[in-house]
Length: 191
Length: 174
Ligand SMILES: [Zn+2]
Image 1 (cartoon, rainbow over the protein chains, first blue to last red):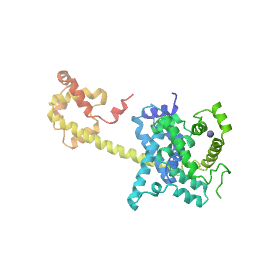
Image 2: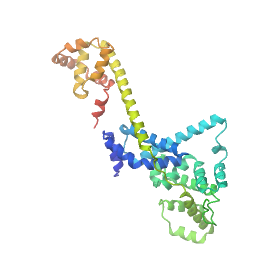
Image 3: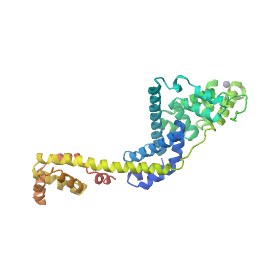
Image 4: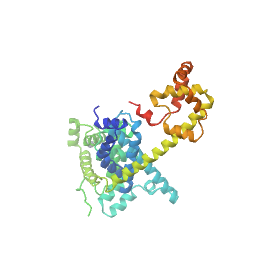
């Protein structure tokens, strides 16, 4: 498999710091965007993307080019964002002594957003309430343009499992965004 | 073909993970439910397009490279501290070895790892952990090599690897 980014990572492992800067430049915006879709706000996403590159920097000596470099990097980002979300949810539970509303009342955020007639917010809320694995699979395939095979590599699962995750995610989104997705009407745009 | 199978196939085709078969086309032509599903999926794609991609905001690079630099600086400090801890461990072994064995160990390690780094020696001296060092220094090389020949090489190898010497070891990697 010819993977110029893996070659850059190996060059970095051999001490060429410039190779790291090249990788950073080429993946920076993709990582910010990916983390933003897995997390909840921009500041958090930027911080998380920086964490991902720090982890990449630290991983230089242990890096093994067994899969594509991008798969390796997306895996770091995915695990990091999942951990951050779990930590934030725990904090919320500890603070109010109740389970986070995302877990007890699925669809509440989406409904609130629908009342505001903002498709953008409704979509963000609907994506937010998907289980981590479904959200990651959908974002990787739909927005990041990864193949099912590479997505399976990132999520450490089978291609069959990815198919099922995507299918379930799209089913949930169709249901949650029913106001906007209707077989009869055109897409309703937010005012 | 069942409707559910076609729904899955349509989603996979959307992402280039499958190609539409003749069987699917004919099912789609004759099944209102599947046509409605296909249309719904197209609409969902239009909705999904409302999540726009982000890029790094102003100051992102500055903040990142400041964090990286801070980490490198703290690693360098930690590295020095770790090396001084390793020095202590290594030098604390000295009294348990014979002076000659210690000398042989140092000489034996020299070609690969430049022996004990100067800063470690300075630190160990500061900490008065090298009472045996003058003895070590007074052995000449021929003498030390003789001692080396009598020592268990595997034992020396083990000792040498218990005391890594930081960067010089890393640089030796291919
Ligand atoms: Zn059908």
